[in-house]
Length: 237
Image (cartoon, rainbow, N blue to C red; front, side, top):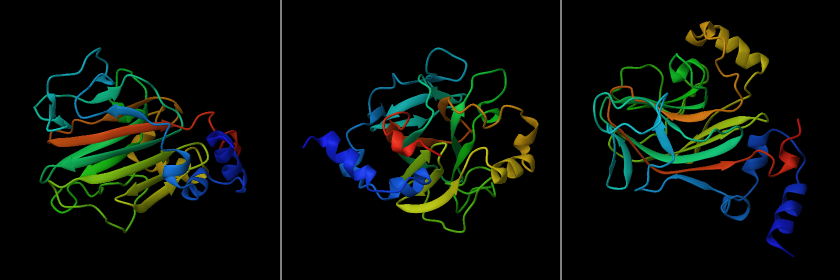
C-alpha cells in the first residue's frame, strides 16, 4: 500500500468536522510532515520582501540562523507568495518590553498590512505595554492561558487558518479557535478598531506579514503547509 493510500484511508476514518478538530487527530509526522514549504531556513531570505516594495530592507538581518528585525526603519515584510488555507509554524524570540505581530491574508494597498490582515500578537507578556498578549488574535480572540517563555527565549507558534476553522497553539498549548466570517467573528470585528477598514479579514488569500513595530524580534524555522485542495475531505463544510 502506498503512503498516499495510507493517508487517505487514515483521513477517511474520521467524520468531517471543523478543520482544527480533524487536524488534532492526525499525527503530524505521519500525515503532513512531508509537504512543507520552508519560508526561512536560517540563511536564505528569498521568500520575503518589504510591504509594497520589491526587495527586502537591510533593516532585516540574518543573525545566527534567525531572521531579525534589527534596525530602525526596517519596515513590515511579507511573503512573496500568497496563501489561503494553511498551517504556519515558526519560532520567535521577542526583545525585553518588545512588541510585534504576524499577519495573514494581507492585501497590498495604500494602507497598512493590518488594515486587511488579522494579526497574531507577538509580545513580551511580562513587560510589554500592550494589553494584547502573545498568541492572541489582536483585539478579537484572547485566552487566559499563558505558555510563553520569557523575553529573549525562543517560543514555538503554530497557526492553522482555514474556512473550516482557525487555531493558535503556543509551545504546544492550544490558545484560541475561531471561524473567519462567522456571526461571532463579525460581531467582534464590529466592536474593534478594524471595523473602519472595509477589507479587513475578507481576502481569504493573501501574504503572510512580519511586522516592524519598532522593537527587535527574531524568527527562525519558518515553514508553511498549504491546505488548499490536498485533502478534499477536510474542505467540506
